[in-house]
Length: 202
Length: 178
Image (tube, rainbow over the protein chains, first blue to last red):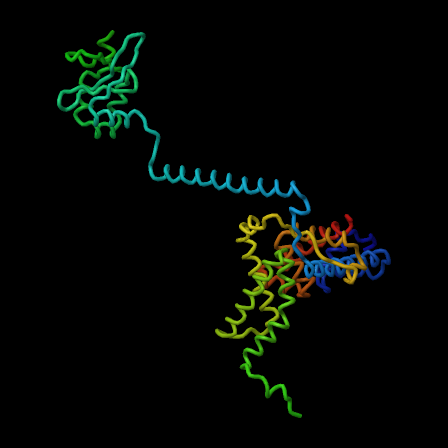
C-alpha cells in the first residue's frame, strides 16, 4: 500500500487487535508520516483517558442557582412546571383510554331516549319552523313521554338501535306503530294522534 | 519467621478477605461508577450496592475466579440499571450541576492539557451513549481486551471496535475544540 492512511484508518488500526489489518500495519512501519499520526493518536488517547479519570476523581457539585442566579431559579421552575404538566396530560390521556377501553361512549340519542322512558315525562319545548312542539312517545301506561332533544326524530333511530329497544320495551314499539316512513312528527296536547309519519303529514 | 499480625487478627478469614477486596477495588469501582453515571452521589450508592452483592456472592458461592472482572461487570450492570431508573434523580437534582471539577495545578493531567480542555472532554464524554462510555471505560481505563469487553457487554467484537471508534472520534473532537 502506497497511499498514506487517513485519520479514520488510523483510528481503525488503533481500535483493532495487533494481528488485524497487516497491510495497514506494514504501511505504518514504512511511512514516517503515518507513524507520526498514529503516535499522535495514541498520545491523544492516553491524554483523554488520564484527563477523564482525573476529572472523575475530582468531580464535585456546583450550585447552579449561585452560578446562574435568577436564570437558574427560573429554569428550576420551568422544569417543575413541565414535569407536572406532562404528568397531568399523561394522566388525563390514560384515564380517557381506560374509559374507552371499558366501553364508555358519548351519550347519544339512545341514552337520552332511555332516560326519557325511565322518567316518562320530561317537559321541554322544541320549536319547528316557528311553532312549538313536544316530541313524544307513548309509555306503557298510556302516558306520554316527551323528549327533550328536539322535534324531529328519524324512525330508524328509534327502531334500529337494539339497546334502545331493550330500554324502552313497549314504549318504543308503540312509538313505532305509525312509523312507516322516515320521520315521526309529534304534536303536543293531541292525545288522539300522538305521532304521525312524514308521509301522513304530506 | 512468625508473623505477629496473624495472631492478632480477630475477624474470620473470609471477612478479612472481603475487607481486602473492598480496600483494593473500592477506589477503582467508585471511579468507574463516577465515569459512567457522572454523579458522585449515585456513584457512591451504586458502588456500595456492588460490594453488598460481593458479600452476598461470597456467602452463596461459588466465588468467581477473578474478583476484579466480576466486580467490574457487576458495577457496569448496576450503572446500567441506574441509568434506566434515573429520571427521578434528574428531578431531584434541584439546582445543582456537575460540570465542575476541583482540578488544581497539582494534578498531573493539568500539566498536559488545560482545565478548559479537561472540562470539554468531560462534557464530551457525558454526551456519548451509555454503551460508548462503557466500552471506552472497559477498554481504555480498565485495560480489557476487545474480546473481554464483548463478552461482558454481550456485544460482538466488531461492535466493540465500532463503539470505541466513535467514542474516540468524538472525544478527540472535544479535545481539539478548546
